[in-house]
Amino acid sequence: MSTVFGVPVQALLGQLLVGLINGSFYALLSLGLAIIFGLLQVVNFAHGAFYTLGAFAAWFLLTLAGVGYLGALVLAPLAVGLVGALVERTMLKRLGGMDPIYGLLLTFGLALMIQGLLQNQYGSSGQPYEMPAWLSGGYALGFMFLPRYRAWVVGFSVVVCGATWFVIERTRLGATLRAATENPALVQAFGINVPRLVTLTYGVGVALAALAGVLAAPIYRVSPLMGADLIIVVFAVVVIGGMGSILGSILTGFALGLIEGLTKVYYPEASSTVIFAVMALVLLVKPSGLFGRTA
Image 1 (cartoon, rainbow, N blue to C red):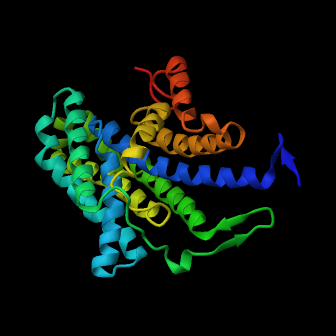
Image 2: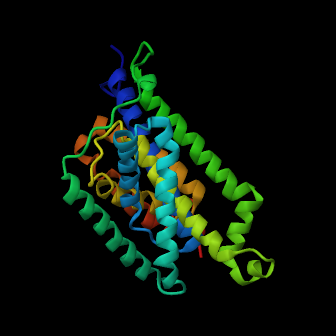
């Protein structure tokens, strides 16, 4: 059996696949965080809770309404995105113009409330979510077995991340959105409803987190703690990519997933800390992040 630095190729590719899947979740979640922070200057600590709500919304749709996976992939992010829009309109809007630390504290408290309510109702062990039949099984590639659902998660995440980047960076809507956050008074003078744009932006960022939750539901158990376990890592991804950088969050999310997978192969003891080691190194060398703009 061929090896790479003493590790069988099959084992190496298997861990790289796991890293790529984790990177897909990192990219989707950090993309939502980057949109919210980059355009609204809100440090959304409730992002992990919205990811959890997305997974639970998919589970509710399946168990209570019989809505399958594809329906949940559309309806759950929409429902959680509406919850996010309501949070922005009723809570975060009141903190406009204040230090971002107030937004962080508010969303942190919100995350604890959502997590606590779900934990009281469903416990910590989580609920199973059955994988759709048309995505079960896999492909025998000769050197490894590629599960079909894992391939779907990676491909779908790449498409969603690319489409979101295109809308924000290359369309008139994205240009209007960026202008509204930099000079709201001027944009308002052209008859554009800036508060509605802000609410829409927060709702879209939250919906991306919920979408990641729906994708994660068939792989992991739907648990109240699934977002809490991930949020610190995702914040590290955003810091490494550059706070508010859309492209930076996407590329860094996938790259760090792969680095984490490689570390599990060659030095498993460091796999849970390698992302934070990279973050510390980047902050020392380039504090604005790999793709961030220097002030």
